[in-house]
Image (cartoon, rainbow, N blue to C red; front, side):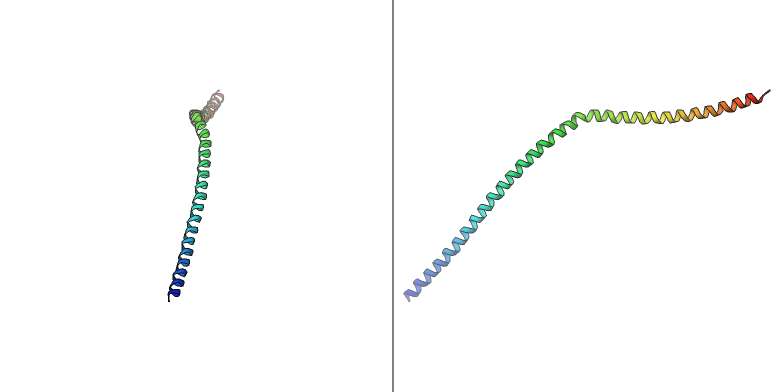
Amino acid sequence: MEQAADKMFSSTADFLRTEVNAVVDDFQQLKAMHKAVLHKYEDLKKTTQVIGGALEAPEDQYKDLAPILTQLDDIEEDVSNLEQAAFKLDSDCKQLEQKLRSLESIVVSRP
């Protein structure tokens, strides 16, 4: 019976040792995965910082150009107003020409 108990305890110890080793292996795998993920996030952080730095230059350029763009918008609006005024003036000129022709025809038709 003592041999059976020793064999049982030995088998149980082997089983527990195997289970503990499996858990240790799992934790080592998790540790390796954690390190890999950590390095990946560090790389992503560096990439994000580079992209952020690259975006600063166009943003600064836009800030520098903003007053000029505003002036261009104002000029465009002024040109549009001038075009409308020119069309109105052209229309008025055509009406005056018609009135002048009608007056000329009245003056010419009188003896």
